[in-house]
Amino acid sequence: MPDPSPPWQDALYEQLRAAGVTQFAYVPDAGHKVLIDRALGDPDVHAVPLTTEEEGVAMLAGADLGGARGVLLMQSSGVGNCINLLSLTAGCHFPLLTLVSMRGEFGEGNPWQFPMGQATTKVLEAMSVIVLRAETPADVATTVGAALTMAFQAGQAVAVLLTQRLIGAKKF
Figure 1 (cartoon, rainbow, N blue to C red):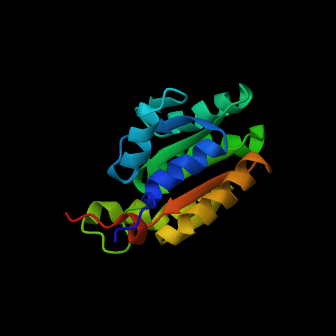
Figure 2 (cartoon, rainbow, N blue to C red; figure 1 turned 120 degrees about the vertical axis):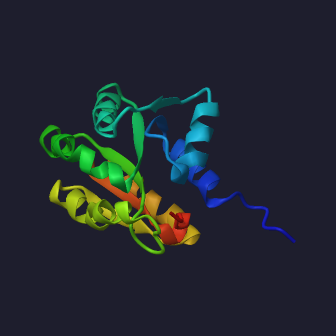
Figure 3 (cartoon, rainbow, N blue to C red; figure 1 turned 45 degrees about the vertical axis):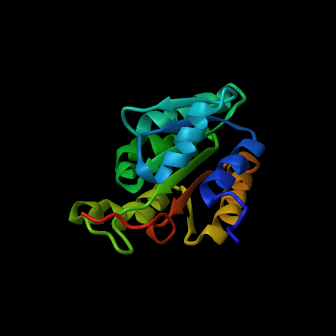
């Protein structure tokens, strides 16, 4: 008998919505396809496509100033684009929640993804972003739940890395 529970991606979307997340900033990415599609189809949220990832940091600062909660969806290769704006989270004291679909790790077939994929954690931590990892579907709810608390109750910048063991490695 098939598992009647929704895939982890659908459960993740529901968890974000239950936590009051109404703004989804994203750069199109196959690793976030379910979240992006759900956000685009939800009349109660604002799904905003970005031309570059750092725009999402600014959007989430504005969301916080306006009393809303948001999430930035990006791939590990986009983390490098955000370095300067990530420094604002510490100085301006606004929460940041980002979900990062990882590349350049377990089973990666594209050599161009390795440099930033391998540097993602170090770059985020250098900018005072707390880094959590979800390796399996069973990890997602607990890890994102912790990130939601850390971001929206404690006002921290938190990144959840959705690893290639979780989302699957892409062949090149």
